[in-house]
Image 1: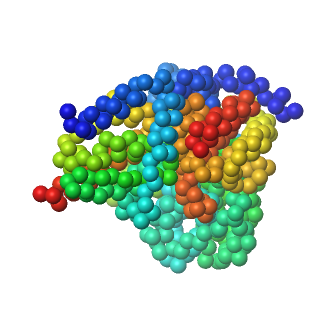
Image 2 (image 1 turned 180 degrees about the vertical axis):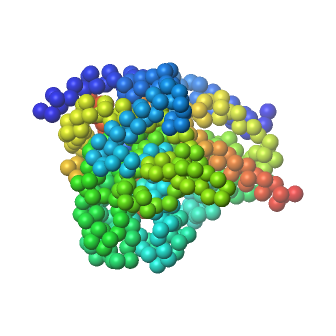
Image 3 (image 1 turned 90 degrees about the vertical axis):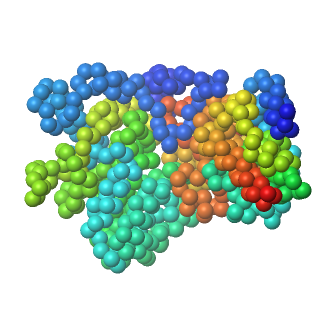
Length: 141
Length: 409
C-alpha cells in the first residue's frame, strides 16, 4: 500500500470515530490551529487558490524527489481541511501524488457536508496539489 | 406593545419550512435579506394556478387563458396599489431586480450620449453597479461614486456638490443589502431632479420592510424582487414613470411585446407589454400579488415595528460577545440586518459552525465588495430578521454564536 493510501485510511478511521459533525468540525478546527503558519513571503498572489471564499495560499518545494507542501488560510476550518490534505500528500513523490485517488474525501463525507462554495474550494485545492506534482514531475524527468 | 399586535405563533404556522430541522436542530432562519420564506397562502396560490388554470396569457381565446390573464393583470393591479403608482401599465413584470436594472440600463441607457455622467452609491449591490458599468463602457459615460462614511451611511455632501447638468442618471438602493442602511432617497431624488437627472431606486431590500409610495417619492424608476417579500423567486417588477417608459425603446424582442410584425417593419405594443417580451412567469406574477395580500393582512407598520424590536434586541445581545464588531448605522437607521464580525475570526468559520447548529446566516461580501473594501475586510456574517422570527430564536443564535466563538478562538 502506498504511503498516501495508508494516510488516507488513517483519516477515514479517525473521522468515523466521531459521533457527529460538530465533533468533526471541532477536530478540523484543532488541526487548523496546529498547522504551522505559512511564511509571509509565500503568501503572495500567485499562491492563492481561486475558488475559495476564504483566502488560501498553497506553496510547494521539491526536497530531493519529494514534494513538501505548506499552506495557510485566513479561515480556521479551511486551514483544518488543508492540514488534512498536507498530511496525505506532503513528502510524497510527484508520481505518487499524481496517481493517488481522492476517494477518502467522499468516504469521510466531507465534500457533501461542506457548503457548495467550500466544496468547490476543496476541489480547487486538490487540483492545485496535483498541478504542482505535474510540474515537478516534468522537472524531474 | 407592537409585539402583541402580531400573533407570531399563528404567523409561524403559515410557513411550512419553519418546521424543518437542519443538522438535527430546529431551523433558525436568519438569512431573510437573501431570500424570505414563503407562506402557505403563496404556495397554495402557485399550486392553484398549475392545478386549475395554467394557460398562456394575453393571446388565448379560451377560458383558461382568460382566467390566467385576469389573475395576472389583477396581480399587476395589486402591485400598482401597493406602490401607489399612478397607472398599472407603469408596473413592468421582470424576473427580479437585476433584470429590472438591466432593462433600464439598456433601454433608458440607450438614450444617453458620450460625455453624459451617471452617479452611483458606494453602498450598492453588484446588480446596481455592473449593468451601469457595462453601459458606461459602451457609451463612453463617466461614473461618479457617492462615498460611504464609516458609519455605513452615504456622504450626502458629495451628492449636492457633484450633481451637474451633465448628470443624467442616479442609482441608489433604498436599503443596503450588506449593512441594512436606509438611505435618504427623498433627498437624493429631489437633488437629482434639480439638475434634471433621473433616479433609479433599487428597492429589493426595502420592499419587505418599508412600503414605498412611488408618487410621493417622485422616483423615476423603482425595482423590486418578489422573493424578498414572501413571494416566489424569478419574478419582480420595474416601476417606471409613464412618460419615461414611453420614450424608452424596447429592451428585448419577442412575442407579447409587438403590435404587428412583418419583415419590413415591426411595430411595438404599448405599455406595459412593450417591455414584457415572451411568456412571463405567470404563476410567479400571480403569487407576487398573493404575497402582497399576505403582507398587508399582517400590516406593514406592525411588521416594521416588530422587526425593529428584533433588531434592537439582537444588537443588544450580540454586544455580550467580546470582540464583536457591528457594521452599519444604529438600529433606528437601518432595517433588520445585523452585519458583524468577531475580532480575529473569519465570518465563514462562524457561518459554518452556526449552520451545524441549525442557524442560517449569510457570510461573505454579500455581492457588495466596495463596502468590504472600505472596511478592509473579506466579508461579514449577516443575520437578517423577518416578522416570523422571534426573540427566542435570537437567544438560540446568541448561544450558538458564543459556542462557535469558543470553538474557533
